[in-house]
Image (cartoon, rainbow, N blue to C red; front, side, top):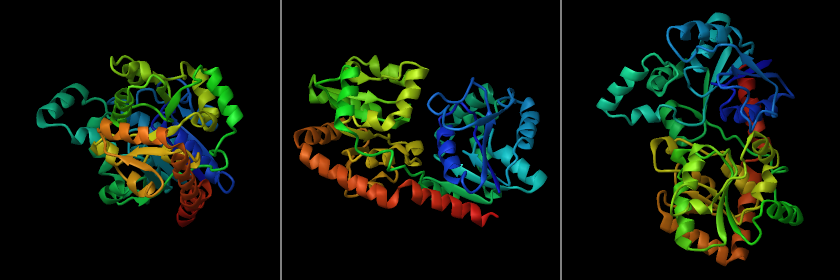
Length: 384
């Protein structure tokens, strides 16, 4: 059976999840990852993960060319099963058109509620967006229209109980390779720390892409409240505008470090992510208190758990369930709670290590790659 993963754009981070899924099933099925390429090549973090196929549809972002481009994209999808990554204007309509034209099966994979942004708009704000963006069918404005088509899919997979309740998704976790993500050689970690000029620092590490809704500000402010010159927040994602904004903050900007200064550095960090996570005295999984955040299950939490390090996460979405008894949970938007928790970890490293060991054991038991691989293969078997 041939399986096609359709991404909204090859430059988006979701291509990394598609690549992980593709590797899960490529031993049993023929697999491809397909998508538009509107902003250059594949996402820098994941460009080496898989052989992607770009479809030339440069005007898919606007009417009236959108209809022609969706038709072109649909006809480029060759799978017996098409997995639309996100319910987005450039994924789900094309996948469902392919289903209508040649009878393939369609799976929608939702990693978050893409319509959360537009759902929060008031009447006046919605009118302003209509006036400005009515010609852009891949804009947030049209997310509710796309989501209304989710019942046409054969299966809906989602990452949280929020998505299960809202769209009837089956909860499916990405999983993590616990043989790759594991406690690292202390000598190799120490060498990397010296290379980065971080000797003598207590490091709080975030292993993901900084985005406004993730609540990184809470942990940055928590470090500022600790008032220690030997602590820093290390961000292992691209040096994007959200990171730069954190770095410009007068209270905590000097505590923010991001070694992914260019595409090559970003690829290196992604390639050696377990070693970089090994730098952390604590690994954080922040989320804000928003509808978008409540719909998410950051796959980075499983990587953090697998490292055997103390994990500190916001008590949002399903994170309390995943980390019950093996992680530290703090209220979102509470720098005071985050500061107390981090101070406790720094003060009692033995207790922190014990918590990290429990997290790794839980991860191996419930969230390892083999568990997710078997679940995805079983799902595909249902669609034969």
